[in-house]
Length: 318
Image 1 (spheres, rainbow, N blue to C red):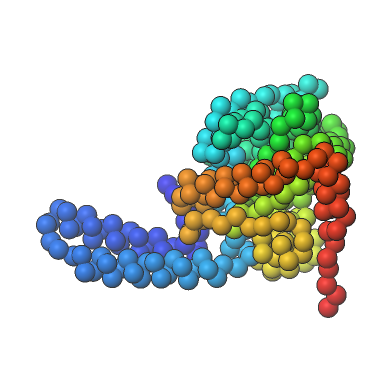
Image 2 (image 1 turned 30 degrees about the vertical axis):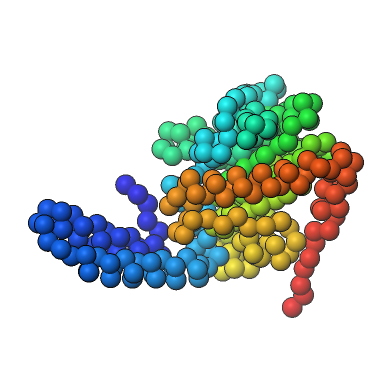
């Protein structure tokens, strides 16, 4: 059964009404085209108005939509010949983070991304997209391989945060993420980052240092989840919508703050409504970014990346 968010309900109800009339027309051989066209006009107008004026909290809800495309979906829709590589060579293979070699329009790339599950069994196996230290160590191992073979790195971020459990802390969660930040800062190949859903905290940053950073229209990128922020500031998780507004976590706000490079538009209603169209938008953006970055020398690439992160830090006092 499809999950419907509260603000989507009027749209879904209209869509259901249109389907009912279409079925009635076929079964009873009655011409209801006028009523159907009228409802379609109302549906188009309502959909446009709804998704044109989403609040930050509503975008956060969309970023978590269970039908939203995940990394493995985009691997199938954008790339060819994906060859997954497993394990961190230290502890185990963290399935919350997948990666491997792939082909993009004849060009070899290394693709790494968080992976959530669809069903409960898979969600538990993938740990709801919350990677352990070995996940980040696996990611860095793959990036080092990409550097060795001189191929670009593409990352897909979709996590509420790194796993905060005792075992993860015992195995060096913070150290693993910090090691990745340092490693990516000096990596001698292009890095293109896409936030495709949730972009939470250090869990996102662990594969988020790049030459180009893009956030999908209904994704978010933040130092903390809205619920976490609300629990700290107001000691009340119900304040999450207020926290979402103040965290400035959507693509337009992040562009204004100089944190990301651009927004990737989604199909009307969200990426889950038309995954193929969403994938085409990502692919177009990715190809353009790689074309820009491929013309830089290694020194120019690393120097520009360093400057990019040194320049981040816009703030306002009020």
